[in-house]
Length: 235
Length: 319
Image (cartoon, rainbow over all chains, first blue to last red; front, side):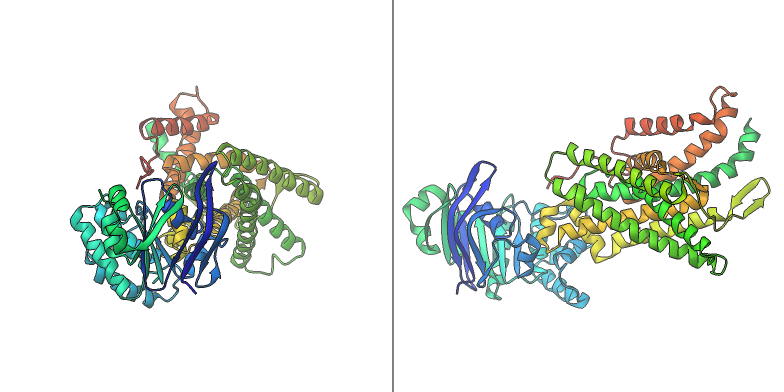
């Protein structure tokens, strides 16, 4: 039984057929990446998993359970974290409140505290900014907060949408190191990236998505060597 | 002129702060709902009115059953407030469920119209029940704290202290709830970004329902206090009071809780000031009946220079 399975998933935005039968699997403990051009359907795929885009046809199962038509808050409480595109931190809340809201489903306050400490181990900068309004953070810090916030629920599966977007190369490096660490500690990652080289270097397997369809899939290192992929996404 | 003005000032302030407390607590309901849904809940004035009638009905019922004289006044008041808050809270939740939730993705104007429709329905239902039970839709209730304290030139009803005390407690309670609790933080998160809040495993519909419950319960409680303070109520008191409380919310920056409280007090004091001093100040040209004109002129002036209100956010943050 695969960890996460998408079978022939179709999504429409108004009249636009955004996902035309996406099928993919993610195994427990893997890092899988979804690469493709802007507007190919990468973000929509992640949104479909979290029920933020309505699945018109097809099926999504997580740990064998059909989650296709569950509301978003129930999907994520099954252990799926989502770091959305553009970070979407709560800018009017403090850093601390952002982290606390990430652990909304956790009632045990001491557990929330412990997880917060774990997040600070990965992102010590957040501790320095704890009582600041999140909107005052730099782009890199906001991305760290978005990831830290998702980690507060200790997800078994973490969906990441363009975590490198708009960040300086040094910061991107730092964030990818942390993702690797997270994975080594047991978190399964599904990573959407425009920065295909970086994503394929980190991932075990990759899917190339084009116009709402899976164009090809293979081991990440094979995709890195593929001439078509090189020409289209690694140039 | 000036000595006369100074002489009446303490009374103006007491009356103004009392009226302001009423505006402020009702304004909270507008601002909370707007903050979370960007919807002006025009039925909120009618929820306030329903609270006034529920409270009055309870007190009349207790009185005619002969229990009122035997129970401690404070207990009766707290009980009345609790029941009225519970019922108006549920009423607000019900309105959201029936009239707003199905229209959540409709164009902005549509839920506004259903809000106005709900207002009319509530006015007519309350009028129907009031006429059926008492023969008249204008109802004079039972006043619990009718005594007056005379402090020199100052006259204060004991009920004024009750209104102020209850309003301040409710406002402080709400402020603490929103700032300090898990659900309060969830409320602020939902107000800023519903989709992302849902990704934090927050049940957004439940938070919205809770917002309606709390805002409506505050409005309903204020209705009870209003009926105690001013004695006579009718099914149309919610309209103009709602409009003014909405004005207070806009003045403070709609969506901002502390702003709404501040706006309520400012508007109440201005209105009482105008009502007492406009005549003497203009040599009788403008009488007390111009108090609303005066209050709204101030509003217009503030909004001309600060369109987002006194405490509003100038521009919505884009992330």
